Image (cartoon, protein in one colour):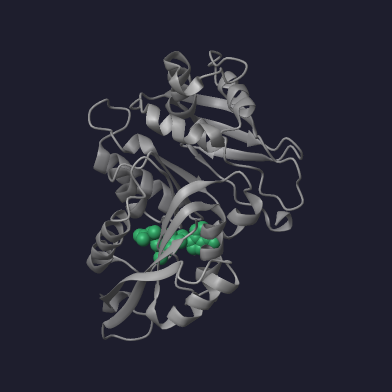
Length: 204
Length: 122
Ligand SMILES: C[S@@+](CC[C@H](N)C(=O)[O-])C[C@H]1O[C@@H](n2cnc3c(N)ncnc32)[C@H](O)[C@@H]1O
């Protein structure tokens, strides 16, 4: 099932908050067009809208995730059919699409900023790099993305060689560590610490 | 789905050359008021394919956009209001996006367009 995602629960929520906060410190959300690639239940998209994004486009493969995301939007910003308190809700658009096709097959898709929490590629090798390629293909200003710290050197090279960015354009702006709860761990009953990097890729 | 989104999406089928703009098959349209933000409109206007927007708005029943972008558009309040309404307040809730080249229909349900392809289309 494509929507299956093990980064769940409380730790996940904290990671979202940190990712949004650090990313927002560069001032690239307010008044901008933002994309959330692999939006899942929409937490980053909702965060970006709350930070004042002019418009957020959120993409995922999974219909159930998108419908949950839409319910979350209504829950957080109020029912958008209701006039009260729907600021922000109005700013999020969901599209069901394969993120891997965006860079090549969506020539008119241009956003300012991408924020994403892509699959780590544990189940499908290289999908995280496909997401990065897509993000770099549509972002005009910057991309904020989470990746396993163990892939740091690889990503640094990938940014220069494959994405064609200048040296120094890809930087780790935060390093995080969190507990993967045992219920979601693949093959062990102990919980497991995961180290992740928040990257910022400067596009222009 | 709003028309700002429609304006940025093309038919994703491999090999399609003229996959933009999608023709719109209207099932249900909703209008929702959004905050008027002229700064944001000025920011995105250069990226908008205006002819496609105008035709799409007309297909959703809004025919008030002028034929071409007027001179001094970024300071033209009446124009910006119409642009705002067309881009950000009209929603296609139910319907389909139809590829202008192949005729392939991509359904829109609950406001969410489904651009997933069948295996033989990728
Ligand atoms: C790690 S989860 C992140 C979800 C969300 N961004 C968050 O931080 O809570 C990855 C998401 O990517 C989606 N996904 C995986 N492969 C995809 C693809 N090729 N195209 C679009 N979405 C994809 C999954 O359905 C899942 O919702």
